[in-house]
Length: 175
Length: 334
Image: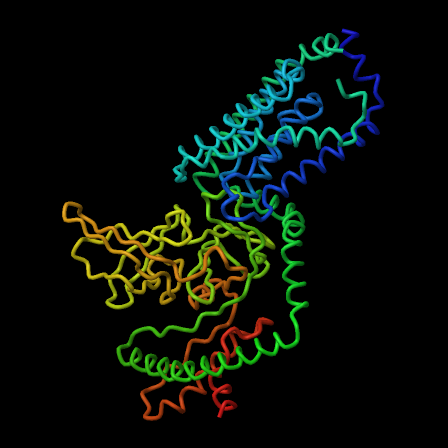
């Protein structure tokens, strides 16, 4: 019982939360901007799912603060941005974040290459959920290149992880 | 660390599962509601307004580049462009004069046939703010919303033809679907003979499909397709596409016809929103007077200026005239 409470009370709550929350929110906003930034037509099919990558990273490293609820809200924003069915991205994002938070202890000790493979699988699930909802709703979709972002996402994972590691959050929340 | 973490975490795991289950059910409910009808438009609009600054920031580098490009253009280039444009303008004016006379004649003929006259549509320029990140969905976001009387289903054109239509009008920006989107269909007629059909988007910017034309339909390469106005969303008579190929397979019931959109769908930066006259009456957004239907007169040249005057009021909404006044321009040209 006491061991459950200790880590929570050991931390000054409000101040710490704010200093930890702001950089994370900024990183998510940057990811949202990258999602709608203009790109040449040929590269469009390979745009990584930046928001999904960022949320996987934070779910992995701050699993108690950044859970499924936040992922769901970001997903709603993404739905409005992309003009897709409401709650489509929300469902897909909250699912992969749920899986990541659930297994974060195992995933955290993975070396980078293995982690990239896991990210590949997570992104494939993410895309599959979107694809599946599109199919049920009757939105006509697409060719093989639909799965392009899964590959580019896994390729970009080391970069995303390296960049996000420099985001200043409190050392105490790190493993 | 790992030990305390897992101890700390294990009592929360069911809560995590429960939370996800709750969100899952919530998502499914929202998905169904959103798919069925538009009850959630208010929510969509609110979120859309909240992320408007993001769109502006993302668009800023592109806008800045355009601005710099415009400002850095050298003097003699500007002069060249200017002279080229005034030459073009002269040509266009000459055509417009003829057009005005034709329109007047058309109105008279329609009056004789007791058909309803068409009123000139009101247009307004909107800038494209962002293009959909999903390459399989040909949608764009423009910088006009319900504040500028944009409404769902409104038609959008560029200088060469139909571009698409508004699907979700926000407060300051709106989501629009291009005619090349695989989910978009557009009722058209063949300009040459009035043959009615429907043009489907294909997901490619340079191709539309016309799947429902029988093998013996009178259609050939080079035919211009224009909007028929039958779908209700688009005003009639705007060019849509030019037929590029007609393949007739005797074994199939329908011919495979494809067409190339006249509008530069993947190059446009500005589009024009169209308020057709009937929209204005229902929406009450502008007081477009119906064009005066005059009994047939013998001097069409007299009628053109009178009609041009009548068209003046619709463009009074702080709008630079998109269509130059044919009468006055003609006068100064001579």
